[in-house]
Length: 418
Image (cartoon, rainbow, N blue to C red):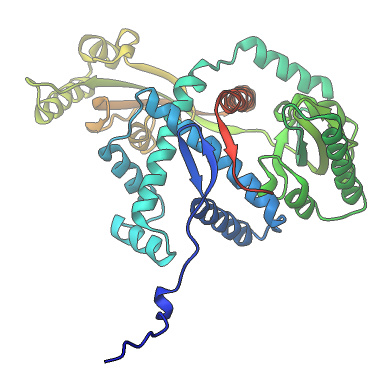
């Protein structure tokens, strides 16, 4: 019998093999990994309605982010940071709950979007690893002093626009470390082209997607609304002299050329909040005192107070909270300053009314509302926000410096041309 050679079925045809696109110390980035991440970023940009940058630009940006992620994960594992399954499961369950889904429903949604649940788990594990690493090596070392807050607030007053917020757009044309004169000239030309197009009225989002290397490039270069104290110091003097719709000239810094556009200006409002003055008695459970015991004891104390005993004296003799020395007095508090369970009960009470026993993470309480008042918390909130924004800025600078140093200390080899 003659043997007949038949063509291979289509399913057995040769397929392109996966390949390495970058070496990162002892790890690698594969072409399939890069392609998958590029597809994800493209989908996000399309969903947001943001214009897509050229393919090579997007691939380079995504690959650089993947390299930094690889380096952080390597460092985290090398320094003993681990994420156990219990922590991972709890995090995913919380994400599902925030989307008002059960875990099974959340998994089904991922599968409908053609996103492997196991891949999602590993991505989340890596996110937690990187977050813990940044917390340990960067975030915990960043502090904000009262002097820094005063300086920022003084600078805001100096601008004379402390009651205004600015909506800014931003484009960054980055200068890589070690760039030679030819590269610098090319980068300057690119920045000038972006500035020319923006001043000619071209859409900021389109220009940011094509030219910008900034973190906000994916969201159209939008920095959002910011108070004067929240504007990067590099831009402050330019914004002070700009009108709505104005575009700055090129702003040079060690990181590259910046362009900012003042998209809008608005006045802020005063923050009037309802403050509550309360006091409480706290009992804690242990091996000898059960929940039932604590509830019964608090009910007895409540009866004593309603029978004429002074709440403050009863608190001093029985409460296990630090406020016991002050008769359980919590002082005037703003909404959100106390644990939710405490505030929920407190907000249902009239002045001088005492609650039934209730439980929080600290133990069992009874609470009495002494008074309520309307309070202008603008200054408190202004200082708190200034602290938060200063910290965010310092964190961003510290993380950027940390990542840059990590990148410089690593062995990275590109195996793809852009």
